Length: 249
Image (cartoon, rainbow, N blue to C red; front, side):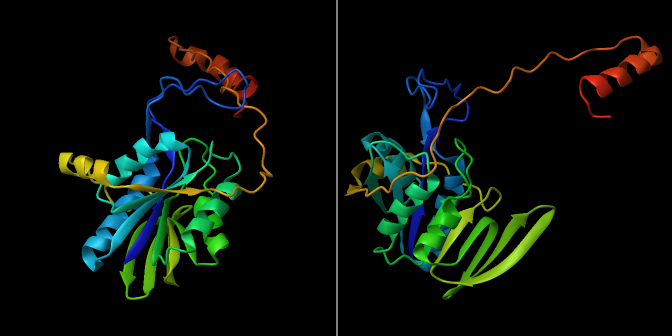
């Protein structure tokens, strides 16, 4: 099988992100970058399929040269090839990124294209569907179980309050969700091999962004909680606070 996995570099989930002075981006100094966690499920599933059916896994990511360290982290899991679509920065409009990815993917002859269900930094959650639309291929996101038999696939996807089972023909685009698998650790051998794999660089042809980021803000500070120690006598005050401040009754 010829499989592509599109990944995104995101800040480490333990990083305390600070907003830059322009109010429209984050301060990148001191940030530890990682493979988007949902993308690791995508990589693992692709690797398991090639281990079962044979084939190769190609990592594809859009961004400046600095993301190549993260691409090599993906390669260290066991992927075989990598492509970086060069752009000076990652567009705020997911449709622009999806179009650039689709243009690169068209010429790859891929049987399956994997992405994480969403990126943990912007949480748009649109990329799997947008890429599928751009390629005119079946697209299934929120996938927690996947079976491939010949040129047909069956996926179990997570929905509100349950699961949905769908079937589709290959080629197709899959959005990987947590619980699809357990991503493997990067071995020392894998890390060393990843350093030797050449990363092909293609120039992005980015469309004009129609979705513009106007402002980033911190969430409002949480108020400290109230502790009542007077037993049932506090009930009227608790009810008042729930009604007037919390507005839940």
